[in-house]
Image 1 (cartoon, rainbow, N blue to C red):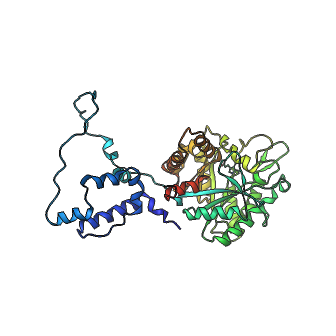
Image 2: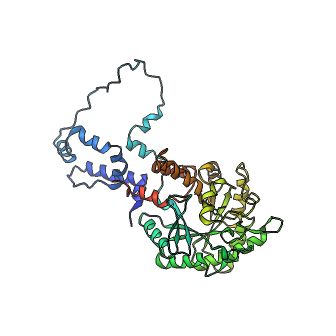
Image 3: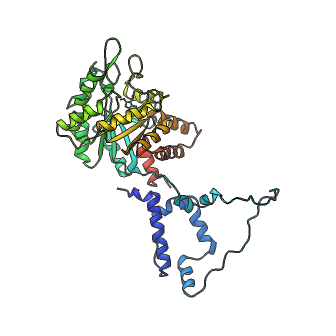
Length: 420
Ligand code: PBG
């Protein structure tokens, strides 16, 4: 497995400390430059510039210093501005924030936020088929065959340090009912897949989705009454059975994404009653009724047959309401609080971060992914840079972990695998 942790700024600083300690020992030592330092330095051309200045090796410089020959101060030359530059008196400013940004090493030292593959969770679409079928609205994403393509994808992800996965099943129409009972079939696609994955890769973390929509003939997250009302408590009853079935199969974290009231407490009790005290709950605490889920619903063919999800998912106009959900989920025993979507809801991520000590997850949803992909394909933005920036910004807003379809691609970048 790649030692991906080396790419965090903290470790990069550690590598430099080691470097200067060696230098001051004044003993010529063969130096393999630390990979972590090479990462950003070479891309900025800084390493090359440092070498060129004296034209001598570090060993030669050290030998001179031992012999008492110290380098003179650099000459007081000033690089010339282009002709036509106005001659002015420097502004009288005590504070010049640009001083802390003037070199790659300073910028790396003062970087406040970092991201590593350990922060990423990869959502995976699975189906019963043998083939991997491309998802039209999500370039680069597939419905993976649970026995083949899925294992391959997990293998490649682990290789770059992504060890956490969340499973979303595409369920055949014939198995969908109004009460979504396939959701707790112990031999259904999800439990079977969990068992297979845990058998092959016991160290991965498997998150599951707890909601009825992939199993509901109505395409809703809960049971629909004949007047169109989504029935809360009856749905929670089904969700508890679903979560227990997933835990029985070996799930590490069950993740209710349905937004029914009281489901976290009920699921906690159901898990505990079956002896699954160690199975965590990641609650979709602030899940908004968002148009950014469009491509996902295409991927699973799970569009609501009628109406929308506004009676259970939150109004995108609301901020304070997220605090009500936070208080409820905390009191009911959630282990992780999730905000969804991600980038358009950075204020909500920060709100939860500041109001709870629990880990916060952000879900960079299908529509966010597809917009970045499309912008890249059309050459309107640099896909890789925008991807990395969007993930970093989710971390800056306060997310500990990020669910993102970019997880493997981003981890590749963090490992340097994409560099020539
Ligand atoms: C459904 C569920 C949805 C997503 C995750 N779980 C869709 C929805 O609420 O309609 C969306 C994820 C995405 O868009 O990437 N329980």
